[in-house]
Length: 148
Image: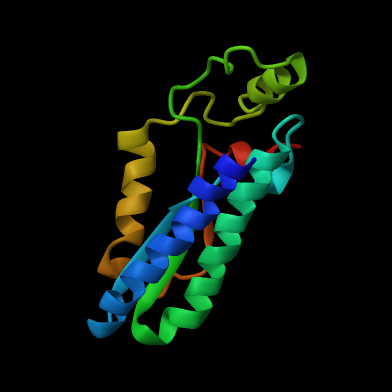
């Protein structure tokens, strides 16, 4: 669990803190973090992973509120799995079932593509066109978050 928090929310926080003064000096900046829908929906066997990603989402919203006056926007993208259908080696049956369920009821019916599906959403959030979009969580998952 320490590794998840050290590389996830701590890494995101330290990077945001390092970049913020430079962005504020230019009165312009874009922060886009990555999270997981598992934090919103829950998934058996993925508690520490989901919790570490929810911390990233919370830090992103806090950055949006604190730094918006400096021309900095901060948003979190929850991407679909991008071509990683195979379960983690050695995982337990509950984890494998949770992983497989990510594809049940997905309206688009396929994995996301990192370049063609997720990349354009991130590019928009990094652009001037997103200057009034901040503090948001944006699911780029083919509608998978709409699970019943």
